[in-house]
Amino acid sequence: MLKIAICDDEKIDRKMIHTLTTQYISEYHMDADIHEFEAADGLLGALNDSSGADQPDIIFLDIFMSGMNGIELAKKLRNEGNRSEIVFITSSNEFAADAYEVDAVSYLRKPLEASRFNEVMDRMMNRFSQTRAIEVNCERTLVRIYVSDITYLETRGRQLIIHTVAQRFEVYQSMAGVLKLLPHDEFVQTSRFETISLAHVTSIDEKEARMDDGTVVQLSQRLVEHIIERYDEYRRRIR
Image (cartoon, rainbow, N blue to C red; front, side):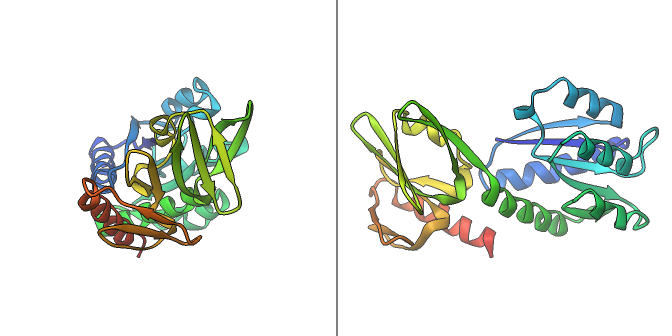
């Protein structure tokens, strides 16, 4: 689940960002936990009260706010080790250079345009797919696996086997439990016992999916229509 913070002292702008975000995540069947803040102090307080695991994945940050402005807040967050993706929202290009100093993803002008907003979201989703990882118990050892490396998962008896580009991991966890850790829009179950990464599919038809490592995964006829629809959605999104 994506964790998103919106910090803007204008209620109408917060609502617009919230609406555009909700539309985006709904279109791609994602889940998100979105929180709004009207000032830097509120966001800082929430971040200080949370654990590192609860830090936002994305922060939409207005630059012109009363009290601490967005650039000052971003610099403070970076100095404290926060690595959230930051997107500045503003009505001026005055601070464009400062945005790059804090490794901001983008600098969006008000009034926001849905097409431009979606482009920025697509860029962040691509960045997440390369750096996101899950942790699973493998032979009593906690193993970190990058999501982008996972090709497919299969259940064999009581074991779940996670296949990656380099090796496979055998874990005593349920398919449903591991799927909760993975981005919903990048994986789809092909049967009761198998799930594939859409990023590693080279071709698909009404009977099987062919993976980039040469594996052929049979598709449940009950799920074929849903699987192909999800694959087509994924392909449209990454174009």
